[in-house]
Image (cartoon, helix red, strand yellow):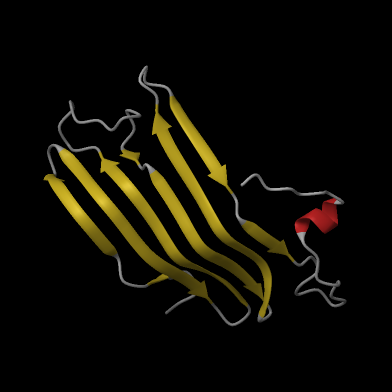
Length: 144
């Protein structure tokens, strides 16, 4: 694998219906991705899209947003960035929910989940590990 390649785990498509002309509906898509070289890289585990719609070749084929791709929900188990063999950024438990109201208005709800940033990873004098709220001097609360 060269420095520009992305290693993909199993690409799992569940509940696929449709055709090239009319477009496709996919109940669930999931995969893991990774790109790494000797000094840095990234990986994504448990990436899932649900309620996926892909517009077809026919001009009358559209998704609910009139774009070529739409999904109802996206979830991410974990994403990590490494530098010099150390994790410099991680994101876990993220999700996006898209919903259309009865009058056709799209509402998206984002939940970033938990994230960590270690500034200075890969520098000559590494900094102490810190989370983004520590760096920005923020107080973070979550609505449950």
